[in-house]
Each structure stands twice: as C-alpha cells, then as structure tokens.
Image (tube, helix red, strand yellow):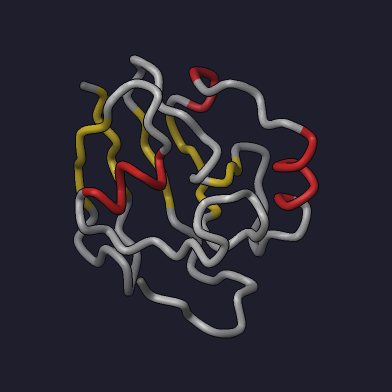
Length: 112
C-alpha cells in the first residue's frame, strides 16, 4: 500500500491525515474511501476542477496529465506546477504528500 499524507485543510481535513491507497487507485478515490470529503462535482469524470490538489511530494511518480486534464487545470483556483485533478492522478508505489487548495471555482458545494 502507498501512503498519502494530506496536509491540513481548514474545512475538509483540519488536522491533516495519512491514508493508505492501492496502486492504480486515484487520489480522489483514496481520500473519499478514507472519509476525507474532497469535492468532486463531476463524479470523477474529468469535467470540472473541484478535486484539484497540489502534489507537494511524489509528483514525479504520477503519469503525466492528459490534454483534457491540463485544459481543466488551467481553470483551477491556485494552480501550481505540481497541480493535478485528484480524480485523474493514479497512485503508484511512491508515497505522496498532497495539499487541498483553500478554494475551488465551484459555486455550489455538492457534498455526496
């Protein structure tokens, strides 16, 4: 199992967390499975930016983002070079440290 360290987020994960993820699982799936309620308004279909994360460690272990993901990332709040849509970033055997940005461009929360 691969570890994902989630840095503290004022609403979603105030104390931060460490979760285990299976190889091939997306970061979003792993967070949701571990009760970290990251927004994912498009149901993980790569059609929005609400699950945007910044990969602070382990970024190089992820497959490159495809053109569709890159197009959506361009619209994300707080975009950084290590930004990914968590619904598209598949975990490998390298541990990750991720930060959930403070804001999204989503105008209405669609908590599931």
